[in-house]
Image 1 (cartoon, protein in one colour):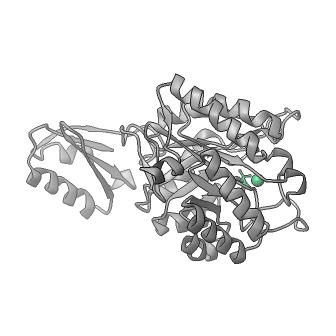
Image 2: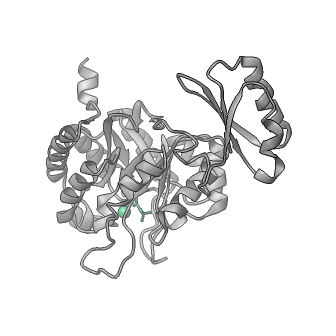
Image 3: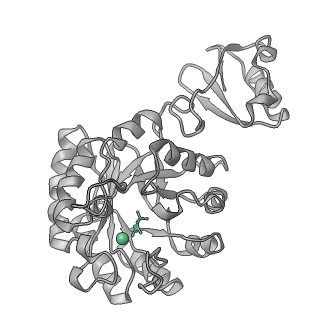
Length: 347
Ligand code: PEP
Ligand code: MN
């Protein structure tokens, strides 16, 4: 439910409504627009009767939110949410590029990749230290050792760190080293993990499950938001369809649909959505044209030797070419890439 206050409502009137809602055991999200305050009410709607509020002074209108997700909806928060982490802002005019290997494999592999993607113009470094693998016999990641290499790469390059957390017990450890907690596609509906990253109040990159609808992705985001953690970025990473020519099918539609239905930033992962390095750049261009706020791209100095996802990883030179192509698309749709770390350092 949303309580829209009159343009001339006083602070006392706003506070009176807020305390009444809170004392009914519901949560309040207060947004102060340029003209009027809007009080968003989240929780079990049966706890309050809108008619009983209508007599309170200062209230102009009471509206029901029709979507099952509340805080994630644009009805609730009309203005774009900007998520800040490690010196970057996602969700504004500037597009942010996250790049790096699928897995952190060794100190030298990670540092070499970090320097290469920084030079090409990336703003953040990705790399999994905890890997969700289909087979228990595949490389599972270096764990805390991998996180230490990520933190060292940030020291050396200034790139913010995005890395996956797979279990509730590891959330504090990953927070020690990272700037963003990635929740992977396979964990999108791991509700205990969603509660934990919500409670962490740390920036989160929430990847869409491979069989999840857009509404299910937004409901998963709602779990995190319901803890008061508003720093959530959504990631389209391809869905399972009947098509076998690519690893997944990029749901380009999801980008404008999400931008219409939620205020949260949307990032595209064309590496997992295509599964082939030679399709990544084309689909990255499409994602930016469709309105994505950022990209997450797998890059490896020697893809043929990668411990995971080598076939979809770009070599650094090709990643640099992706950046230059994507920049032109961004300009064509009235946006720009965020300034490179080199440009920022030179200021
Ligand atoms: C990854 O980013 O390497 C990854 C495992 O992605 P997803 O969860 O989208 O499969
Ligand atoms: Mn991967």
